[in-house]
Length: 246
Ligand code: PGA
Image (cartoon, rainbow, N blue to C red; front, side, top):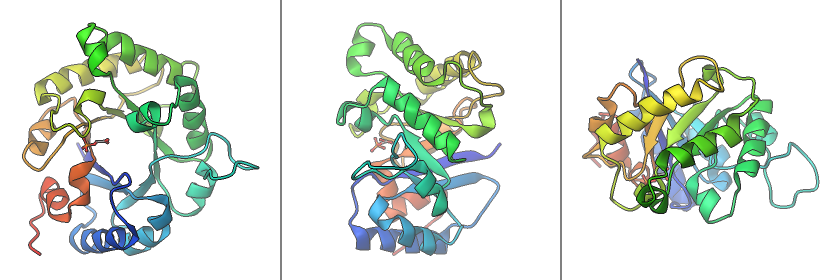
């Protein structure tokens, strides 16, 4: 089974650094049957990164508006993203939920906007450390899934999930692979309440070059959503099993 390796560049790179990274990736990565690779650059660099990647690596957006068009200063819609070759859109990333106050209701609207534009949402869910301490992991994940998916008419081909425990993102403390595998197994059953087919679920949160393969060995883990380690070309290529010397 093909695994998914997605790189969320967040706001880590300036324009030139984004183009340089795209150049390296497009030279080194070939379409293959082992991995589906996608990167999520800043919107400003989106078009130029996309041109450099030249279809060898898929491209996604880190966010989008919940409406398709209109007087929404500062927003970019999923329809506009679809026009410029975008394939995936992150929806409900924990930084959007926690720093920008995105509610489950807004996440649902964005999910619908992405689907409406014919793009594939990467729906991010995850519990906080407080949820964990209060034994509310399943409660939090169930609620996020229910609010995002209840009544939706899609099958598993049209969506990807990312399990990203908030306490593991950018902290250097990842969820242990065996624990992530257990949660993914439980999530796959839970998601069957809403969508047809077997959900694909990526793990994200402090994935790095040393721990990446230990996740990919697990059956319930369909791939990785990599943040910090995805903006270092040699680390990201090593995660993809490609040796790279500068
Ligand atoms: P991280 O981020 O790999 O830097 O922990 C993951 C993410 O936010 O998607």
